[in-house]
Length: 78
Length: 418
Image (cartoon, rainbow over all chains, first blue to last red; front, side, top):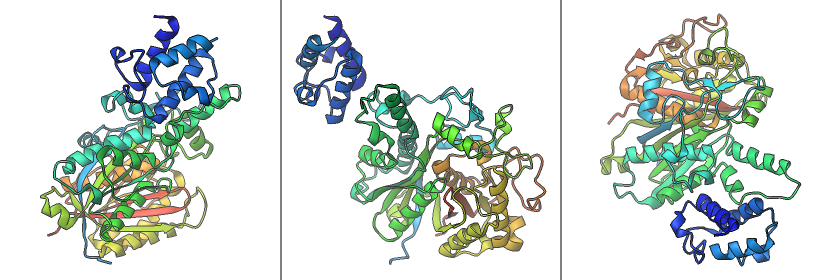
């Protein structure tokens, strides 16, 4: 797993209070990991802070799963 | 108005600087323990006051799932913890009570001060890009306390928070009382909480010159009625009551601690922070409460005073007690439990209602500790229950709380008479 993927996983475990085994690439924040709309906003903010990026709202809407977050950040993280 | 509806207390809960359950709190009260100690919640080195009455060894993970705790400000966590204890004590969730008829009316003077402070600090440290947490507003707003209590338990009756500084809890209790008397609900979870031991809380009250600066001896700093008192000691925590319409409580066989027989409110209309030294607003509030309760002053056994240990406020309240109770005043037991718990601000009325109810239940009046050099300006013929608890059959207990803004509130509890 890439360094970015490791960090993303750690943030998700911390913020959503889930087990590491649940955080698979296909896992959806809302459908599988118990996040509500506010949790999702907070997750995106944590990604922005951790990876020093600014994720526009229209792109944030497309980040629904662990894998989508990792792909986006691998592409955009500085 | 169906004024014959009576209201009783069927559950109590508390998380306080003396103990994290109602029984542990009572143990501290009856033994005259001080909850004051150096501040651990932040580095207070540069502050004028470097001690407070914190809830000891608090770990949110003892009460909340890892994900849940951080979504609530500390004052809401305290609210949920104390109300959970009261709700379990009353057996509300296990006796088939209609949850559509259960309300939550809570008190908080400030709300999520820590949450507000942290978000502002974080914005200030950044480059001007707003990165506010989506949980910031729901953590900060004072009504997140009553909201979280209802969400957790499914209570769908009246739900709101009263804010009147240090009178907030008593205002909540009185509002709950009135809603129950009016038949708008059968059960209401009430009380209040506060968690203001933060940089801005301590700094703000220091600026008002309202807090004790006795840093060399925190345990003796809260000393109501003592000549050497120099201000209040900040406390934190929560006290909760389950109030219930009497026939409803009887029908489900609930344990009944006491009856809430009266509530009084008044305003000083004098100054935004200073108490009216004449005590006239305090006379008015106690008279209003006794009239609402339908009792004579002679029937009162115990007054849990506001008594914050400030030079001005303590004397004004005692003067008012002398006016209202006249020749009966020296026969009262009077005590300020803030000498032990510190001042919980908007949460004060909650834990002091619990203390008053337990005084009725146990026939024991908790003391005013640290009363060693009685203030000659305060009538020493009165019994301030100095330093050691006193056994006394308490039929009627009165609890006063007053708030910045000139808000005065009094509640009256009585041993249940069939």
